[in-house]
Image (cartoon, rainbow, N blue to C red; front, side):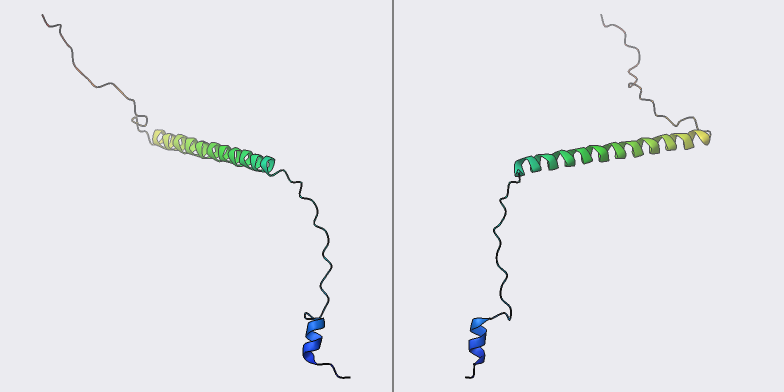
Length: 92
């Protein structure tokens, strides 16, 4: 007896038998807790990044002031003064 190609394809279409499917394990992951922990981690990293940026800017300002003072300048620090209004005399 001769078998046809279509008969073989119907019996075993992929050339190998498909693997037996195992029962999927129960998913007991607490996604709400996981999201909360991820948000805490992101907030912590943002605080660390902000502290790093603040430190770098403070060091840059200090270095700029130091260069200005080393150059012998006297106007390195800007001092805010209230606007001059002059002397006011009481009106009679």
